[in-house]
Length: 552
Image (cartoon, rainbow, N blue to C red):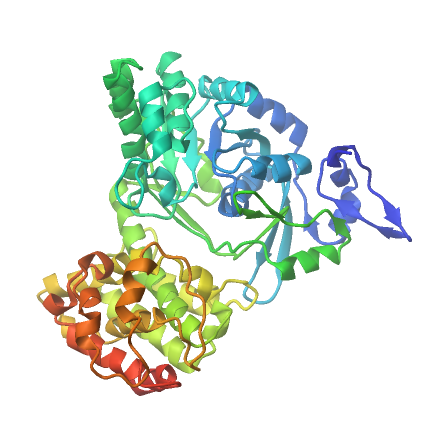
């Protein structure tokens, strides 16, 4: 029996509730238990959106459900707009099949505030969910219909940085991409191939303007999306599978745009502790689903209160001014770049990575708990305020000092955010060059800064190499977080034992690796200090704590 065909049930005089259109008809019970419900006529919004869609989002994951969908919810609640969101999933179709549609596209957003309070909101702004599958004629026809609409202004994406890549880790073209380039836009199988195909449909039906807005957490994200789409347009045209005019359409700034954006909101995977809170309200059907592609998804999302989304204001088909009312910030490209560098290179991401590395070594399971650790708290404060802040260019739209203040006083210490150092330690080898290397380069290039003043960043580098040994500070083994370079970097430290002092030559391949650190640490003048730290960190059990106490 479908969820939408059920009714709200009473068991032993206890009212149980379910997340669905029928279940939400009993509004008084939901509101009595503290849930904020949609304050608009959802059926009317659904009709208006299907007839004249203005925003379709690709990537039905947690960040979208907690952020963009909530932004639209607030706008709809204010009656400033009468249309909502359409979401499409092109990687893991089961998210739509097993989560969106059984719950009539509703989501429960649980906002976990630093003061210990929680806010429970039923999000209804997503009024249609689509499956990006070219083999499914019904699903794909609907997406083509959306892309033919004059009203469509924005296609946004949260598909992860990896989603835009057309090659594997060794630089070889992915088989599905190669297949799609050879066969043309009719029935592509790769994610970007399918998106490019839909854009080709829009080109064929009047070359209508649209903004293609990557909202993924990566530098110059719009350029990555453009490069991927353009590769398909050019490849198809070259193979005689698409009009040459399609390439010109993609390159016409007045027709198709690829704005840069900066997004920031911590949205861990749905946590069992949050599920328990909701179950106390007698809500049924909250069980998470792990799909065949190993996606972990639930009818609820948990997220922090703070959020930032800064977007380059480049929308060829216009955009609703009301989006700013929802808290989105629109500005010029240069400002987006400054905000992105502020966040990624100094004011947030380096602090997160620092806590991730040392948190794993010291046995922490929650990032927030690390902020109660005197040495770790001082470490990230020195990296943020002392070593990082001097190189930040103030973007104007956000104040860097206030941003760090919020990160260190509100966001990371939030004890109710179930975020882990193990999650954040994922792909660290891919992050160090941006999160720390850019600061080092700035010091080297500066006439009024001395790179030798950087004392804590080299400690993080040494800490990461110590982390690669997969032995915590008590001498016990632990599992390293996923990272594409583990097979390359772990053998470098594999033979190092506690108490070894002759370590420099062994770790030299890491110290000279510009791809990892952004610079050759010898050329930068930071190798000796990094080696010295590493030597102390491997002195024996308890050496990580002793080193932190000594230098922080």
